[in-house]
Length: 149
Image (cartoon, rainbow, N blue to C red):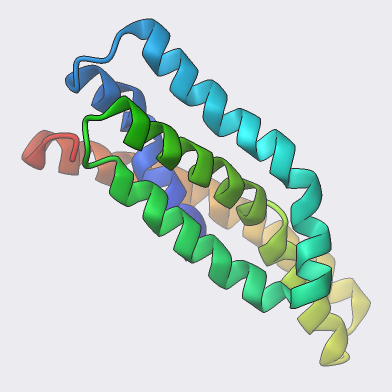
């Protein structure tokens, strides 16, 4: 849930951030297409990467890619922002697959009862919804106080 909070915190204000940099609607569209496109292209490969190098390592890679993606948002350059969206798209593919597969792997490795897994994911889905709402509120307070960056 903490990992998802990072995504939820910045998500609602990315478009406004790009507008504040003077980007045109078309440029912003291209940035979003780059992010979703890289997620589409690399999302299929991410699973095999986790199988080969380990789910935990895949989650660490997520943190590195996502951190780099967030850093690029501090630069009002189309090229730098494009790299950031590309990295962010790959990171998003990892976010929505690696952590859950790592959870299943560890759950099975430690021999926990199978029926508990459904309960854990049910609580995680509810928790993620609450985190999204709270992150949106926190992000708005931060944006009002400090601006978009």
